[in-house]
Length: 358
Ligand code: SAH
Image (cartoon, rainbow, N blue to C red; front, side, top):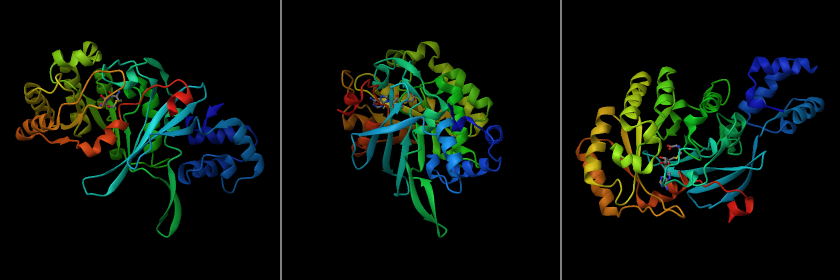
């Protein structure tokens, strides 16, 4: 059964016509899904029972069902989604104040079951790579997060998050085509119309794919997981650095920011005794200045079974001070925000539902 999001409008009209439904019904279905954000044919307005039944039996709307909520707190909720083959992925809804002090909600989406990148500090890498998510499965992680709001005197169903980060399980650029299609559908003004500037994709540094993004003038934000300011340090924790050493990643990043005219974010997890030396801080500052990049310093979050630790607060502050004194725009997450990082980059692959909810 084909997933609804695989159809463009003309194809869907054609599909209905071939099955003896009026072509104009396609508009009603597209509006029900993309404007009213309804994902069950039974709920579609202005559509008769025979078409509802036909759609329910012949088109897949929700490719991954939300089956559980894990580690819920005020600020974050981890949601478990079950895929049709029995695998699970997690996505996270986080809430945090933005620069203007208002609370914003961010959806953190996964793109793969497991991950092949093998970063030595990351929970998702622990059990290796299982498979790519398909288009429907990527989008399905956004579908349950809809609420009714009154806008211009009318009740509308809208996504309840203001931002999307593709920082869940998996390496998004290793599932390139499905990622691009999913972001296209979220952003398309005739579909979900979610602003490109409110979507960030994070990569461990697949330089060839970053160059491809530059060529296609990727309209979304890009974050690169650096985690080391020299090949020597980066190779110790990120095996991908052998294939794409720092120099390659940085020249691809430069190409991206020139072509797309946008500032890149460099993510840098602070790991005690590994990448938190002042020498790394100075080299990181140099890299950020050359790229005109923003640096996001994230204290490492403990992963069960791994030995890495975060440096103590004074060390983290001193590391950030070096960047700031060098004139680099930099964010150091406060302790209070640790729930947020706990949500991102720590999504482990769990095999059984009982396992996942424990
Ligand atoms: N594969 C992509 C996106 C998924 S990980 C990437 O590498 O960017 C999202 C972010 O969480 C990455 O910066 C990753 O390095 C980071 N991360 C992974 N494990 C973490 C941990 N235990 N604590 C803090 N950040 C972590």
